[in-house]
Image (cartoon, rainbow, N blue to C red; front, side, top):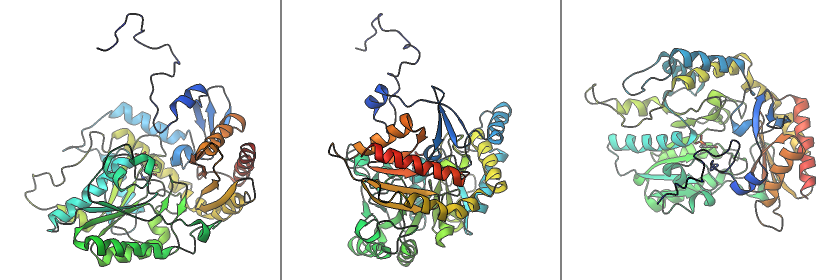
Length: 448
Ligand SMILES: Cc1ncc(COP(=O)(O)O)c(C=O)c1O
């Protein structure tokens, strides 16, 4: 029986932290020493106790145009008053079509079709399902195997978790999808430590795909999904030539290549998409986060036109792809997306990130030599700083960094285990890069 005791209030007292089971959070530690946010403007968050934190994480790789953008807020507000909700199955809104065209324009030529969903996780699962469906309708139904990569992150759906390569995200959830295999991570500290940009060593790791093809047979493999830069496991840029090599091998064997650009999309690496930076044309690109500057949930998949066209058969009254979400192309998200793309274009933020990359890399590399720093990696406006674990075990020092940054140094960072990830909004100034690096140095010394 549920406890309906009259002594238990129906609604907990205001500000009681008990009821919210927080995602990907150390709940008990948080509730003892909360990190509560109340507002945000430009490069800063405002805490509930009125402190101004510099945002070295773009929220969570989301707010590339900085916080509190009035144009985006106005677009969302106007849309909410005009059209609160519209069913995306069998009906459409003009803003969804406009946004799809604008995203396709930013994507490499040939990737012309956009499928909308609400998050990066849904985008990853959607892309995997499109790959399976494509092979099925093309008469290659034996191609069902999906290949991800160790240390990859593709969200938390069953598809994304299965192709993902983070053991803590997988180990509680049983056997996950059948028929999934993984490439090795591209990181090797001995060979790559303290590389700026794409490491020189590591293109040959892509050849592992040949091994998997030999093991399973090419005609059982549907798709390979990788992040051009693995973000969530601590910023692992692709080695030079790695993605090209992966493209060559997938092409040779009729395997689809999916780039998960949930983090790298919309300017993080100095281009609209990382595919452009690397001159590699995948078959699909997933996106989320930066598409709305984080102001409304939205994700999606950009699909090669030939894949889309393969579905467009049979009677034209029949649904071609039995997949979609109640909130696909939600009016508020579409409005936010259009306003966001205007800002990216008008303020040339992708180019800005590109121009700032070298200075950002130099600034972060100056932390080499700080206590316990064993590697620093940079690419675009993103950096990963590896610290050694302290004696209490992996993750404790990183967690202390997060807390020290928030409580003592007025800064928001992201940590992955004992790696600090810096990934500020693309509007960050050179002075603010300096401020972030100085504060990170203090944090690292504070946890030594
Ligand atoms: C590469 C990548 N894919 C997918 C996801 C999942 O996105 P979401 O949390 O919006 O589901 C993330 C989130 O960080 C990501 O970095």
